[in-house]
Amino acid sequence: MRPFTVMASGDLHFGLASRAHECARVTSWIAQEVAARKPDLFLVPGDIYQGASTPADRIAVAEWLTEIAEVCAVVAARGNHDAHRDIAILPRLHTRHPILVEEAARVHHIAGAAVGAIAWPERANLGAMLGRPVDAVISDAVLVTGICLIG
Image 1 (tube, helix red, strand yellow):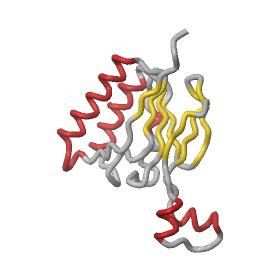
Image 2: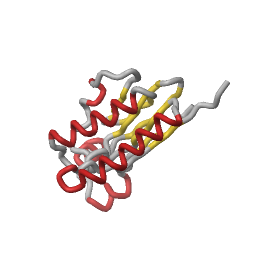
Image 3: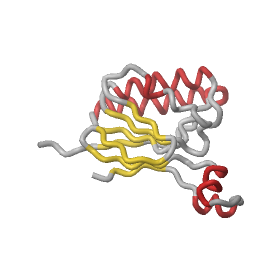
Image 4: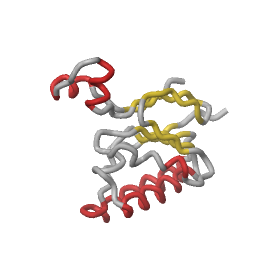
């Protein structure tokens, strides 16, 4: 029985208007590594985009993740640079393996693993949960995004 393998890459900050060549080079290399190593799971713990994405950004990310999801399942969490709902469409891509996107917090059971994913909470949502306004100092101390492999 072979070991369960995971690859991850976060903070891609796709922003093709200013960094098209760099994004294409780095994501191509990542996809090649995934194809060569054939992991069971690929994790993206936030910041797929640099900010609100453009149609060109979304096409580039869709092509990249489709290539990866032909090899293995993908779990992504929304990061603080990802505009609300910008990554929500990614699970609709037609791929061999599923792409799951987390915009809140949840444990996903995928590829034989339990994966905890926490999206970057927005300050207003954090304030609503606490029942009072939240200033930048408190929110910066509390706000995190990420993914962890639970088992």
